[in-house]
Length: 357
Image (tube, rainbow, N blue to C red):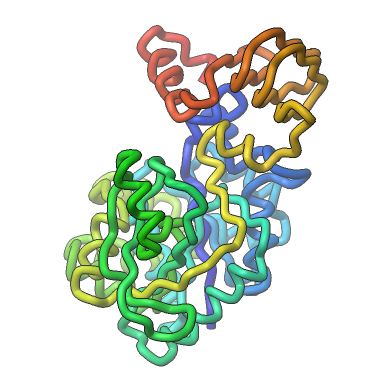
């Protein structure tokens, strides 16, 4: 049986000022009528039933997620009392699912990505699940065909063919510089790492035990209390003591070096919506290449992204700018600096302006 785990603990700092600490990107409808996390649950409904979908999130977001996703059992919204990156999150989910389905396959997805061709993703998922049923010791990941040399993503180097869609993963590469990204795209041997992966829950816990020996007993102790009155207090006690480490660094890179990771190649119209620049690619453009979610008047201006809900925005003689309007803050930046918006949130903290976060 397949169980879906959706990681929803991100803060979305590069989407400030629309994304705030108590209402981050995954809870916003920035790419359609439904929020990003609602779109994710809609999409994975083809993979798992609602009772087998779990959301891992922070305490400040749990109530809103329950409101947005009433179709999920409330107890399947698992609340982390503090952030500890993705390894503890995945380990806890694996331990919880293993109590229910010892040989179940866990499909892990981010909560805040956009897929415009879900059929292509479904094909990759089926290919990986089929491979894992035959070789349960492996870990499967989805690799996205790169459409341009992006420096903001990690990459996967693919090796030998296993099936028509599945390859051995020969390595995980950190975010490259421009020249390296160009080489990756031209070679045809590298894919974007979309952060979607698949493995049996027993394999997940075995890999965790091998790499982080103290983590497995901690999460198994929590899983023993899942859906009991004592779970909430126990996770508040245990979780802050867990190592703050990503699943990529703790498990995926090391398992990949041992030849245990396979990769399904997909072209599902994936967008991580990681910055305002990414959102620009998802919106329809006018004749001058301007894209607006609100009223815009543009004079001698091209390539702008405007996200405004209440006030008219007028542009004169400016190109490639981002203008984001909210009730209490306005962001203006060059489109090429959209990745740097998180520096604004860091500066707000330093200057004691937390009310804007």
